[in-house]
Length: 374
Ligand SMILES: C[S@@+](CC[C@H](N)C(=O)[O-])C[C@H]1O[C@@H](n2cnc3c(N)ncnc32)[C@H](O)[C@@H]1O
Image (spheres, helix red, strand yellow):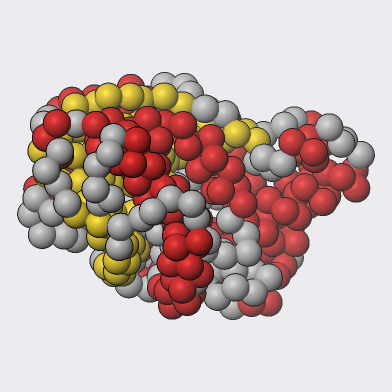
């Protein structure tokens, strides 16, 4: 599977789109907001940038929904209000939105007029803000050297640049049969291959950004993580375990072959805090100013958390399955086939999540880190 070609969220603004199914990611952004504010205030308060007139902000993995511009608008407001408090001339902003070339940039660009309107309508007197799109992989160079002051990225860096090498034996037999990611039955060599790929990707991500970010520039990066050292612990693996169970369900119905499941692997890795810290320290270009994790329910809506009847479980499972579909469908379609198979798969996926909800309250454990370029 050529990851960069098949990895994109469902496009447009329809019922199955990422734009209509990204409230989980929005809830994550809300949790990270205080850290984001603190970090951008540190940046504008830093003496290094007192003479800066144009601040360059990049959002990496912006996707096509409303989340990216809503974060950007919050950053611009926070910085401009801080300049006003300090009787400093409003800064101008250059904003670059990055995602893979297959991303539906058009949907996000169409919402730019209302983004600019909102900036004008607010009671903060903003300097001009110029938004541009930069299609390309953040696993490669994206921007000119020393051109970026602030990097934001949310829910994107857990995607690997490629399927790890070493998931098949020397004879070409799949080593992680029946699974689509690390699971309790995964051989240690497969878990190691996933970690090695993440390490290589994250290390090169930091080196590439270190060329592009100005000394003293900051970054806030949020991505999926795990609480435990063991990558095969259930808490870490349950998301894709549910997907593997649903795939095996439709294989039993003869819709796909078991061998197709054996040869499919998600290009994804959720690291532990210790793994992330070690890579940052070893790479050495950035000071790690904060590293923490937090829990968030698969359904982050507090109103639904008190309900436990089977119909409530099904409602919540439908909600979760829809956002997983918005994220994973293009990848799954490229391997397993079109909409009929996807409809059957996500029907099973919803049922499997409802069963899980009847037993437990599954949670994600994202990590958020802040960095300062040395
Ligand atoms: C779940 S979406 C998150 C979108 C947005 N940041 C949010 O919080 O709603 C993840 C995005 O990361 C993008 N992505 C994954 N790997 C990437 C890469 N190597 N370079 C650029 N973008 C990437 C995907 O295409 C996808 O749009």
